[in-house]
Length: 113
Image (cartoon, one colour):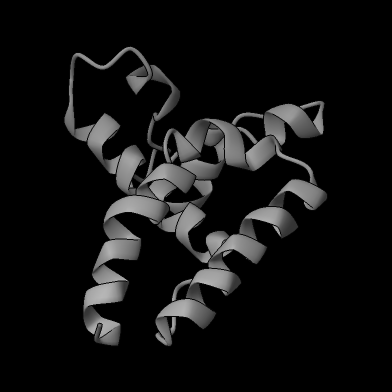
């Protein structure tokens, strides 16, 4: 098969499985887990012969996309966590006392947006 078809198969199946609920769990997963996920991507890249995006490159894009969806939906329960600063250009970032909260989607989504 051609590399283009194999890349589409990868993005439709393997990537969608690896990144399912990605914004909820990736920020707080261990470095060893991230290496394991990247190993799957590298193996798939070797099989397909096509350049594939790294897992750590997908996370900020997914967070930004999800944050923009939350901001556009006025009835979303997480909308109150995305409040704009008085000048209206950036979102207010809450202070966090632990790395678990610092790496959560809410703060990552605010940082990326």
